[in-house]
Length: 193
Image (cartoon, rainbow, N blue to C red; front, side, top):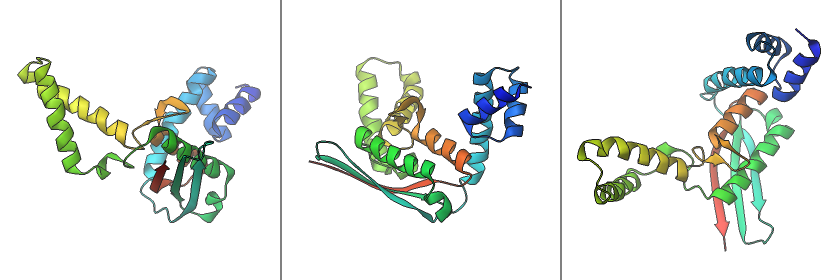
């Protein structure tokens, strides 16, 4: 395998040389396919690391240029070493900016109170009945609408503002892969005048 291609893939993904070589062989030399293979393998590794305790980290702030919107975010990782890492710092700033732009109400779907979900279900059910949707299909349609609702109001479920093809959760998983530690959003506050 061409060493220049391996280096190029390594620069794109921050993966190890051997992993890059294997991914390029698997992808038949196609850089984009190899990067996707590495990303999928990395997310699988990241899921394993997500169970580990993240007790270090940092507080990140974003203040909009008009000084009428601001965010404070606590982002955690496992070690002080990673907390000081430039990529972790950049991740914190990017997530704080995303919160300012997208105004999530909760961190993850499990944080949404049951009464909020039930109100939304009742509202959506009424709308579906008013639209004349068949009774036997209501539950299936409702399930999709609630899933969409949860992704809109939770930080981890929202499409990332800088890269809408990925969610904020995907962004964090990608960073876990790159930095080699569990990373989690502990809490955030968004202020707006």
